[in-house]
Each structure stands twice: as C-alpha cells, then as structure tokens.
Image (cartoon, rainbow, N blue to C red; front, side, top):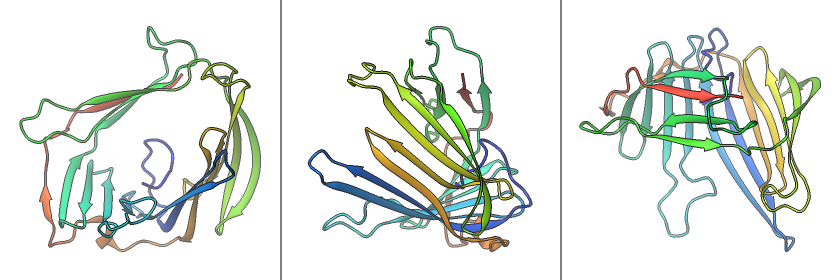
Amino acid sequence: MPLGLGGETVTGAPYSADAVTVVVQALADGNRISRESKAAVYRDAAGRTGREQGLAIIGAMVGGPEDRQQVQISDPQAGITYILDMGTRTAHKLAVPKIALTHSLAPGNPAGAATFELPLPPPSAGGRGAVFYRRSDFTNSNSSAIEHLGKQIVEGVEAEGTRSTITIPAGQIGNDLPLNIVSERWFSPELKVLVLSRQTDPRFGETTYRLTNIVRAEPSPDLFEPPPDFRVVEPGATAGTTIRMRKH
C-alpha cells in the first residue's frame, strides 16, 4: 500500500507512481549484495488504494517459473480488501479489521519496549478465528533523536524531511560498541504519502524506498475492482476483528 499516515484514509489526493525499494548490504570480505523490488501504487480521490508487485524480490529463481504478480486493492470506506492472484485469476475478498492504538505500557513489558499485534490472514470456513503474533523492539535502546531537515522537491512534489537516530547500547546484542540506526524520511503533506526514505543499519546495510514517476491524476476506476473474469473467494469473516497496537 502507499505509505501514508498510519490508519488514515486519504481522500481528495489521487495519484499513481512506481515504488522502488533497494537494499544494499556490504559483507565483511568486501563483497556487496543488492536487492531491488518495484511496485505500482495508486490511490483515487475516494481513498481507495492499490498495489501491484511481483512475489520475487531478488528476481526469478534459476530454473524456476516466471515471477508471479500479486495485486492488492483496499477500499477503506467499504471495509474491503481484495488480494488478486494473477496466476490463478482469483480474488480473495477480506474484511478490513479495525485498528486500535494503545499508548499505555502493558504490565510485564520493560520500559522502552514497543509491541504490537496483527492478525494473520483469516482462516478458511470452520477455522477457529484469527491468529495473532507479537513483535518486540529492543527493550533498552535509547529514544530516537529527531532532526528536522526542512523541505525539498522529490520527484516533482514538495516533501518535508526528518532524520532519526536510534542507538543500541554496547553489549545489548553482543555488540562491543554502540550501534546507531539512522532513518531519513521525506513526507509529502499534499499527497500524504512517504516519497523517500533511507535507513542505515550497521547490521543489515542500507535500505532506500522512493516513489518515482508520480502522476497526480485520477487513476482508472477499473484498477479498484477485480477483473470480471476473476473468481471471488471469501474466507472466514473478520468483521469485528481488531488490530491492537501499543506505542510507548
């Protein structure tokens, strides 16, 4: 999905663009690993969004089938998301769960820990309900320092930039010295989307996300509906399911 404000439905700001993500990792022997993924993203004036992306990030496997495309269409006002499998010509219709954000510290969680819960895709009919998983960030990492970078034009749109630095103290993950994770983000107030971001992490390398070929016009309405020849599949209903997010 286009990266905007968390949980916000943006109306009146249609656009389409290509989203390019590049991950570069430098190895200890001087070698480098580069991976790139591309996706087409779009949003109409009503706030419906779409994303078209191949399932392979690095590229087609040697001797394997060609990269299959997957399309995700979300209609927040109708509370529906479609996952289109272009290979099987199938549209999986899902109800969009509600999002709840909790700022309070949950009992048993150490200070500085950030946790959230998200349901996996709904089970088939007869299943026992949504399955949840939990992810925790570093418990003792220092709060990020935020630096405002002003404004600049990115791909023809004005964007406001910030830079944040998170420090993992020495010894927390077996590191001899503190580790600094630096994230730079450029956000368009007009489109309400992230147009450029860079994150440098000594453990994993540099990740860059960028919107390119931005067109500020209404996309075709056909992009927000499953093609007429697709078979629509509705798994177990998720109506009333809530995603709970904790932010400390």
